[in-house]
Length: 213
Image (tube, rainbow, N blue to C red; front, side):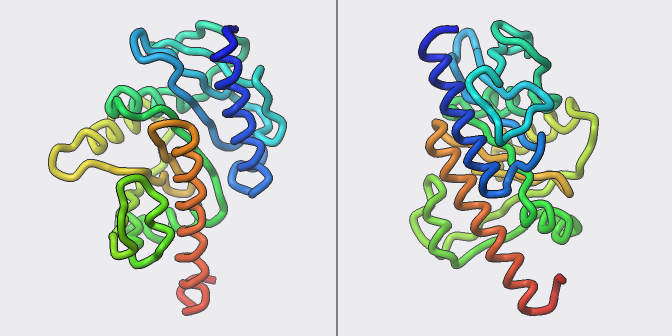
């Protein structure tokens, strides 16, 4: 494995261990990827079934655009096609991260009938790329969970490429978790931190109002 690829995988592993410590990817949940090259496309992504608190640089596979293994051993994540879909649709994206936090999972269920969580008025919104004011209204769309990953990837692709109202920053899968991305791993990590903070704020606010237990 080339030194640059090895370092990219080490950086992803460090992010995964940190997310595990914060309770966002317990057990084998979640998956993380980084764009290694655009043409031809190469990504580094977590191998399936690994404990996220024990990741290291050998825990990742280098894949091509068809999700074929170029380097590494193991099985690619079942959700690899979702990562590839985002890289294909958004050429400025350099990393895609997927977490399974308690608050994100709860809110994805509570707000599923509305199709999205709307969050506005919080200063932390300014931590998301392109948002300049706390007065921004963030729309985090919720997709129904499914084992038909190609169909989910197709629906995600349609939404992120929509000319009228494209998805920005992130989306949730009902009773499953969060997908977010950034121009590089650092930005994607920041987006995870901001969104997980906001999810907890929204959920605890609903608890205080007695709207959820």
